Length: 151
Image (tube, rainbow, N blue to C red; front, side, top):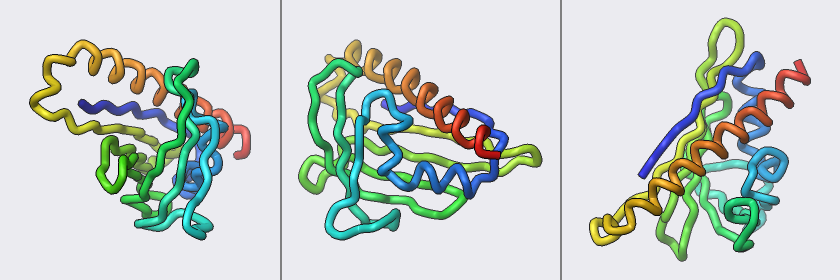
């Protein structure tokens, strides 16, 4: 299961990347993640750095913490991370920043591996995909409001 949303922002890619890659900002933008913090002494984004996010699923619950690991970290171009259970990635989130003459196209995407035996649960996957796409749109709109107000 996967999906993506792209929003054009009238701001430089580097400025948008700085907001997104500092996961401590996640609670400002995401409808489901209330807060995030770096782990293991990490002070900022770097491939392999870990952080945890405080999630309120579907904005109503359950509420829980997830541990994540940065998988892509190129200033002004991309930022990505895996959501982990133990050391296994169960969800991947990725942001791509594409500069344009009048700003930046920002694409947020997710990918959840779907094992064959779970195909019977396909209707639930459809609902989660729809929710993720809606929430990515909200997240990107909130980021857009901030970066365009700053420029």
